Length: 268
Image (cartoon, rainbow, N blue to C red; front, side):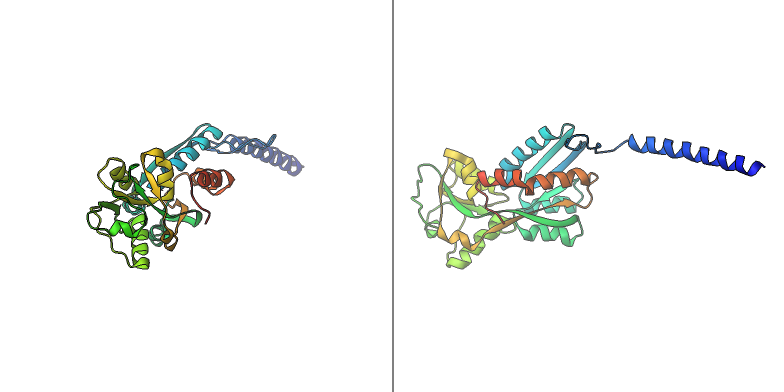
């Protein structure tokens, strides 16, 4: 009868189609991984843009370079600024794949706007330190010295994490500062000190360490009143969430912890 012949033909066609589809899937454009044939690192491709707090410039530059070296074909584009400025840029449509903030408050703004993908992960902490020129012309030795008449002190603007931390210390110690300028990032504050435009500036411990002999750092006990915690998250509009997740894993993993610790950051 013809029925068995038709059935055999149908089974043959189905087998051919299945093999063809399997072959297409294995070589589909945009595949970002390869079969594990010996513990090789999965291949990632394309580019992501990371928006990070200015105080992360040194560490994230190193981590991005190491990441690219370990994953040929990847490119990490970095954009550093004050956390509040970065949030504004992202909410206004700036293309970003990852956001690393110097405080939880600015990350919350992005989360509340439903612009994060997944829960943010805390990866570091930081505290304030006084930065002065190497000669310390105003003879600063304590936080209270910053309030002396005639002392030219520079701080971060209130909406910036380092500015919020400064206000917290002021309130905790009952000290009122009269800054000659309020900057949009810690790097701008540091710039005022290194250029000689200020007698002192309030930045993070990590910024003083990165500056080397360009400034002298003066720790103060009251800094523990304002410990900043740094969160990181993928941006919801990212077109390459797999690569974003891989970079975040590097920051929060053992490699990131070592680089951050070496730079003076604390653990969350």
